[in-house]
Length: 604
Image (cartoon, rainbow, N blue to C red; front, side, top):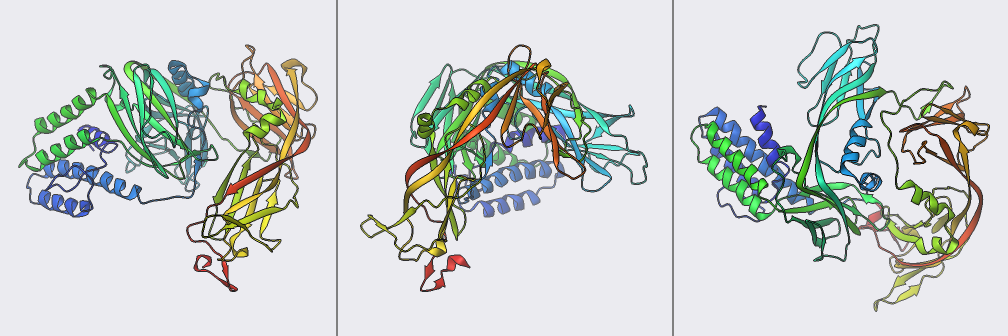
């Protein structure tokens, strides 16, 4: 693919999402887009200039593929799928320049077996979260690898190229990299460093705006930026971002990414993205008009298509309003918009040398593997988080949240977030009584009598109540539930140890803390590290080392930086916290209820 065509695809694919047939050109979404695509391609087939045909086919393909995606998004629903908090980088490292440095310098690679024994798959790790991306536009290309025998391999981006000896295959559109060994190679040198080049456009400001699902129509402002929540649906949010200033003249084409939209459901967990539409009507008219003009050409003209590209770039240069409609895998309860002020940018070019490690979360050896930190990264939010270990019972009660989840046609659950900032899992069961109610014709609740004892189960370990729909009849569908849920109320003690005064079963080796699990059982202890400046360090990786009997012996925690002191938290006691609740229940789409001893269709 030529450089010019790559640029065209980059500009078209993210933006095009609405529109209709090439003949009538209405500017709103219509149902005849498949017929319109066929008609447009049939017209292209009548052309004689092969270069022109290829150029127009690419425009049509990009346009109509995204239209079809937009059509399908609105009709799709998903069981909730979650990702890590994508705002964590912005909260921990609010300064954009420091964020760029920490992200790029903190990257390292993990090597794992690939599709067969001759392939080693290399995947990059971010310094903070596997699901988070940096909140600044960047362009990154890994071009070579150094092996442990000193050999340097250049990356090939064409998978059809089969170099002699060891090959390094990379993709320009992802961090997917494969090291391919010849089948007959006896000695297989391992990669130790990945080399790359990065360009980043550091914005003037990065702002976080938060909305609830009830804030549709509301506009929030901060400095040059304003964000309006246009609408919220069950699984989507629609926004408009306005910058009163134009994008900076120095902003590269690839860096025009002015916002991100994320959503949380009632559990406060962030939902995975389903798809997006990021184009307003004016921008769609431009792309449709350009495709119209291209379809009228009889022969290929480089100046014509260069002029179209210049027109698209000029449109973006003069754009101050940006539209987005994002669909999520789950029910939207609140929305976070990360908006970038691109009126001023700093272009930073950076040469990268990322270490390559062989990470295993469970190591069948007692020998410590050393993973030196590529850079030092502090966690500015951790101090506030850890202060909540002293949360009072009243504060914990105020933070308790509950929600209901329809897991399948047969099973649903009431989930409890116990309001504490830690995950101390404890076993046990409860015989607490839970009342279920149906809804009568007037909408009032009626107690369901004689429920089988196996109809529901209270789990203290999972902090939930699971109930089985086949235990209820079609005439007594559970619409409400109330009762008392036993929640966990931990009592926590804090200890602080200097690096040179660690107790038995704790040891520091470089950036790794070794925890003897015999002296510090994992279920009762949590550990955090500070450097010599008294700042908390971000954890890079952890691994559990197993003995000959495959039982855990010690755990190694690796940090981005050199620990100078260790904070240790001990679960010294567990109290029961009885929480009274009352909740309205939702049914799955095809519920399975008992009816005269015969299961309903939803049970099939």
